Length: 184
Ligand code: GTP
Ligand code: MG
Image (cartoon, rainbow, N blue to C red; front, side, top):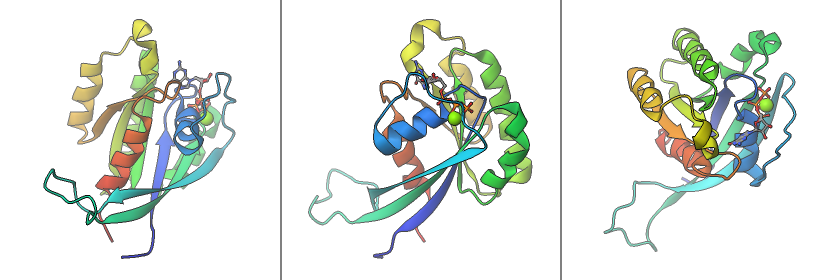
C-alpha cells in the first residue's frame, strides 16, 4: 500500500525516568542534561520506513518492499498530580512503553502498577514494552537486567534497555515497536 499507517504510542512511568528524553532522542536526536519535567503531556511524531517482511539474507535489497509508519508519540507526565490524566493518553494506544530508571528501584515498582492498570483498562491487544532507561549509568544500576526481563516475560511484554543520553537502544526500540504493529 502507499498510504502511511499511524501507530499511537504512549510513554508511561515515574517522573524523572527519562520518557521525554527518549522521545526527544528518537525524534530529534538530541539530549538535554537538564530536561524539564513534563506538564500534562506532550506530543511528538516521526515517520519511519520499515521492511514489509522481516529481511532474510536471501532478500534482494532492490526488491525489498518497505512501508511507512507514522509514530504518534504521547509523552505523559510522571508526576503524581497528573496521574488521573493518563487514561486519556493510553486509551486507544496500540503500544505502551513503560519506562523505569535502572538506578531507581522505586521506578520499577511504579512500572508494575502501570502494567496492571493497563491490563485492566487499555485495549486487549495493546503491545507492552518494558524499558529500562539510563543504561549509561551501569555503575549505579540497582535493578538487575534479569529482573526486568523476567517481569516482561510474565507480562508478555518486550524488554529493552536504553540510554536517552548516549542513544543506545532508542531507535531500535521505536523501530521494533513499528515492526510489531500488524499491517493494515
Ligand atoms: P517527567 O516529565 O517528570 O515525567 O519525567 P521524564 O520521565 O520525562 O524524565 P526526563 O526525560 O525529563 O529526564 C529526567 C532527567 O533524567 C533529566 O535530567 C534527563 O537529562 C535525565 N535522563 C534522561 N534519560 C537519561 C539517560 O538515558 N541517561 C542519563 N544519564 N540521564 C538521563
Ligand atoms: Mg517528561
